[in-house]
Image 1 (cartoon, rainbow, N blue to C red):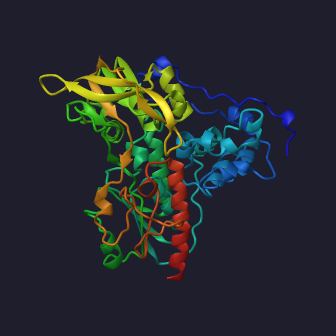
Image 2: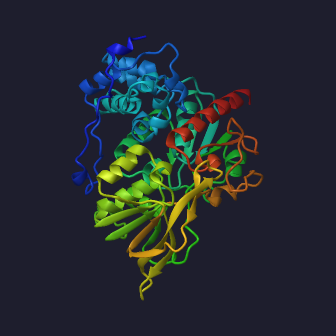
Image 3: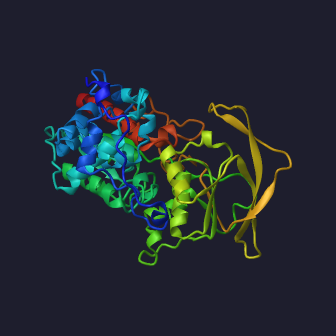
Length: 467
């Protein structure tokens, strides 16, 4: 283990676009590390005998191994080390909340700044891809078993990446015209360039994973038929939780009132930000309000600014300390001119004579006793109502389980919120059917969904081997 006095106390900064420039374009905000910067940062790692950082990673990446390889200058080797347990390193290096996971466990972080594990992961993956060094690992002999995966989001891709290497035939059924799930429709270009997602998809295709697009689980794809008529031995359900949610207040039926799901899907997957090159219309408001405080709310607000809004407000009912969004996303939003209206909650929306949104009425809040989430419950301040003009409101107040797939499978146990009930290995109430990711847990992070996928894949492989 290195002497801590020999290690730089502060992490190597990552260069970014200037806020005023990036607030009006959809190019990626951080530029990423150069080889020299990556080496400097990797050299900070203490190479602990008992690396706690690994315990903070939902897919158990061997972090000291890949960081050491970067320190040694073997950048492609570092990427391959990550891919032993994570099939999407270029994605996770960009969108994982490392500060709450691996980096929060870094021993160096107890006294100084933790090693920038996420930035190094991104660097290694980008270096391998950009320099044409991606290698296809050797697969185990074919087992003759066929696995169907419904949904090509993070959990489904993780299952596919693990099972294809174990010798199983894997087919992914995706409802949209592009594979990637939430990585394609939910996360904006400036945070996760879509060509990078597609490169990760292509890597899985080279491994042998087959993708069937425009196939809706519960409609054109039936779980029982896959198992009983189409020769599949097992099915994994990774359809996410994309059912939009709105607040129960007057005015949500007005024109120019969006769910964050629709707004971001139009912009990201359907390329509305490049209209009219892509024939996808989207409302471009002058004074935009986004209701909510999570990462999706930040994505929607920053997208609205880039589409041309003059002002964008985040309306959130708690204080900044309770914001669920990553600190980095909040920081970037503030830099880009997003206004935060905290301890504020909408109570009604008003429209004009044409039924289009014209204004929002809010009430001030104060924090009371903690609720079930452990955060202090917001309570209305009597007589604090006020109204302001807005011509576009985007609700980012959570999501629900899409019932198309869950209600189409007889015998599939659901909980009271409509999510699939699965055990610690992802097994559902139907023999031969597993589930994981947001359709089981509710909305969570990309890496947690991948972690659930890897757990399910391990159990599926053992089950298939005994079948």
